[in-house]
Image 1 (cartoon, rainbow, N blue to C red):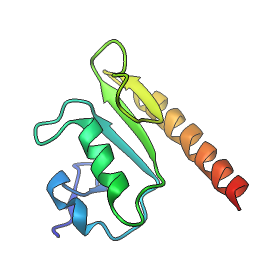
Image 2: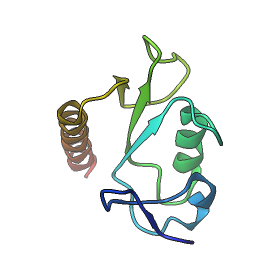
Image 3: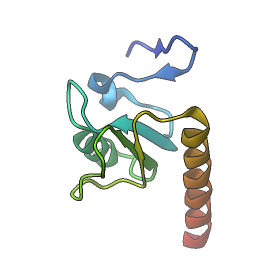
Image 4: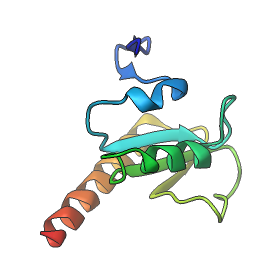
Length: 104
C-alpha cells in the first residue's frame, strides 16, 4: 500500500486500498457522492473488514437531507466549516468511547 498525504500533511488511504488498512480506525468522513463508490458503499465495505466494524461514520453531502438507507453516525451538509466538522468528530468520538465503556 502506498501511504499518501493530503496537502496539509494528514495521511489517508485510497478507497482502492481498503483491504490494506492495518491500524484501527476511529472515525471516517466521506462524501456521499465519490467517483469510485458511494459513501454508503464505502462505509459498508469498511464495516465488513475484520477489526474495522466499530468506528464513527460522518457522511458529507451537498444534498439537503441524508439518504435514509445509509448507515451513518453523523451527517454534515456541504460546504462544511472546519469548526463544525471538528465539533462533530469530537462528539462522535466521545459517544463511541462511552458506548465501548458500557459494553465492558
